[in-house]
Length: 118
Image 1 (cartoon, rainbow, N blue to C red):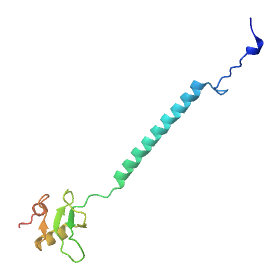
Image 2 (image 1 turned 90 degrees about the horizontal axis):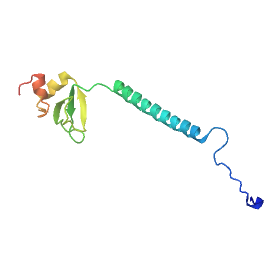
Image 3 (image 1 turned 120 degrees about the vertical axis):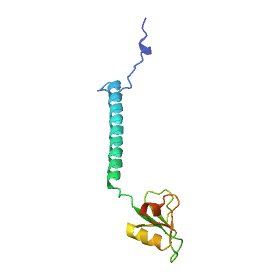
Image 4 (image 1 turned 180 degrees about the vertical axis):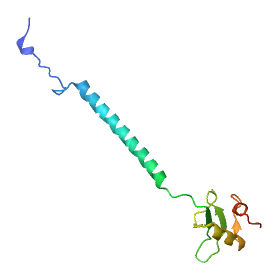
């Protein structure tokens, strides 16, 4: 026996229109597409930065602390021991500085590369 005063109306919480699974699936695909696009953008920026980066210098002069202090060492451009106070120099300047008595770096040995006997 059905009691008319116990009738309960049950409504679906899913919105009408597209089914819930289809909507979630589309949102998931959109998030994946956005993540892929962001990764591709980062990769393109990394490649572009590498192309625009200036070439490494051939020779570097490490400067002393303060104004008017003599330079401390001559380095090859690839040396890992170059300090923060530095200036890019060309081959002729490196030869002249080594001839004037500026010390050559003991790690990269620019005097040997330049052919300076010291």
